[in-house]
Image (tube, rainbow, N blue to C red; front, side, top):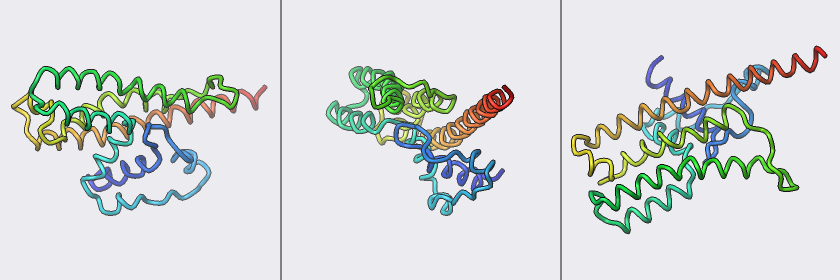
Length: 192
């Protein structure tokens, strides 16, 4: 598969992922099963490198991104121990914030938690860990670059491309597992 095809596939998946990483709309696999045609995301047509960053950003809670930028800017020098400690705190908070967002999405009107956990939603929560680390490497003067001087901006770009390809690909596998499980449940209910 060519890099352009992978970028287009990533952008299509990114179009289905909300800011908290929850797949939105109908699944690509559900659309394929019903014969619906999925439109191509405009970013995918351009095959821009921004596609990879967008794919990574789709898994990050936007509140965390905004808070990290503000506080990292207030800290200033990213080579300090304080900056490194803040990076690790934010890195731990990333999946916790995604988990809280997922739980809020599964609440019903009465306020009780729903039981709609799927492989895809679990992956969207776990994926915030590599997504946050990859995103931070792309920031100019980032804490990662300050504490690992052997890395330069090209390495950060490589990390974002690999992460931008891997996260949606694993998300697609999770969607397939969910579809397979849904089919088994449907067969079980129709058979009994």
